[in-house]
Length: 408
Ligand code: HEM
Image (cartoon, rainbow, N blue to C red; front, side, top):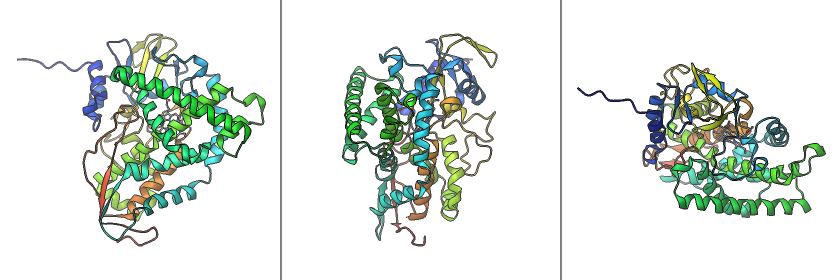
């Protein structure tokens, strides 16, 4: 008789990252959850349990400065996402002050943008939409460019840079030499682009967020030129490469659960809890990382000082010790404190904006597309493992009704 040995944490992590498993990494996360805190062969730690992830997100000994040795950027030239207090808190305060007031009261504008994108496809008969290219990508991109003050004509250039750069977030060993070289090139192009934009704003400020950061009334709050560029890059990339997956993953969940789609059609308020459930069930950011500044005791184990920590947010969201029936999509789930936006001091700054965009987009899809169905299920996925989502999501429909027209 042979006894099958359970796969190691190293194997499970590799399987979860493998492209052939991109459409459904969840069975691999379920296996990880049998050992919520596990050491990998390279000495890093794989954390998949909900409580354990939360504990580490809130522990000041778990540092956000987790850059892999390949990245040569000096510490001061890293974004707030990778900084610890006190510099993190200082940078975050300035960004929040400029960002949050600009997104308040934006819902009507978001509704108009969604309507305009869908109107381009309104017709009398059957048709198809690529939800990614036609709605989920252009919506957040337009919004973040407007907010920050990136000229519309630069958008295609910036969009392709953002795409090339986000691949750089994935673990280095999943990328080829050529991809790594390409990444360095893209970093250089981004720096040039952002510096040009900053120089231009210096002589002609506007009322956008970039101008707000550059001309802050309190001189102590003005960022140095390098931090300004890095922060701008972070916001632009976050605005390009995350919400797209929330809208696409949400559309996928709706089309795979026609009863939920029908409910959303008659009850648009369902969009609020439904988007939270998408953030739990199929989160756009699958994992994050930290490093241990001291020995950290967790779940009966000690993570030694200096270790790299991998926080599997998407696995924690399916932890049966925290969520009832974790593999079920429950659009009105209560008690849904998911990890989709992280937690602790690095909790996502764009959460309110991303939620609003997704709620409005998904409600409009349910309202306006008659008899929508997926053309390919599962859809093709993007290469990225961390910022995970479909490359294309083609939906066929009987009719795309004009806004305001009664649903058949
Ligand atoms: C669905 C869309 C989004 C998701 C799922 C998401 C997810 C996350 C997560 C998980 C973190 C925490 C990372 C960590 O702790 O290591 C984070 C941080 C952050 N996000 Fe988002 N994000 C989204 C959209 C946005 C948008 C639209 C923006 C801004 C334009 C944004 C800006 C940021 C920033 C600046 C941080 C760093 C905060 C800090 O370090 O204090 N995000 N996001």
